[in-house]
Image (cartoon, rainbow, N blue to C red; front, side, top):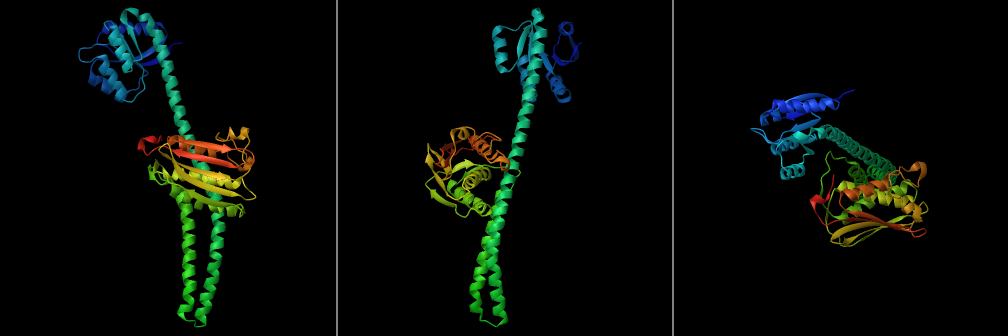
Length: 379
């Protein structure tokens, strides 16, 4: 059974075109051909039709193979470009291959045409499949990042609910005092303290809600900027702190040791989410309480931030797999995505993530960022 082939043939000789088509038919192709001779015809063909292969003579009256190849490449189509010529020399053939031509075939040796075409069609299909899989992988990674962030948001929301309950309880008491004072005709100055305290309580509640909003915000297009790692360290601690309340883990503490660190070029929301993830993991690793320390510093001209806990640490078999997607030690409560997302975040920023741990010695994760450069982020 013949194999269909959509062919764009750039050839000015009708006799040579007939020879090429006869050879393709002989080796089992059912060819649908569009033959053109000029640059204008080439541009029109690329704009209005789809092709699986381009066969091009090296020299035509108004067009040559290097220019035709340049036009095909500029169109953005991944179409194999094969030169078929009776006059091309070895030097020109090498130059054409370096420029992107997939092969060259001499017209007096057309026995090579069939195998070359089959090879190029196979490789083209493989490239297209690889590109499709890469696109699907990127889409899946985006879905996984959103899924992990939603999970973290749910946990943060539970803790912040607890925080708000504790914050608002004194507010009710002060309102009762103000109401009673107004009813009894108390002097304004006697009520001022309660009013000031209520305002402070409301401000703390608003800041708590704003932290959750900032963490959950999904910008349509993440933009890199110069960020201060020390500021992000403090924000991450504030965002993650309510998790202690939701875990009823009041015995844990979060402290800062913020050394000098250069500004780094990064996507602030993604880095903040990575740090929060490390802090939350540290909290979860210490159900009976412990200490978490967030540090910043400078190394190799870049900046680093690390999260260390006094938890149980990890055995070597867990340490080796900790950044693998879907690997989790939390059973049904874990997605196995958190640390994989941290790793992916650092790879996109051209940085690195390292772990130092041992059973009974806690765990210390360090995120290292290269010196500031907008080009260091791979999206």
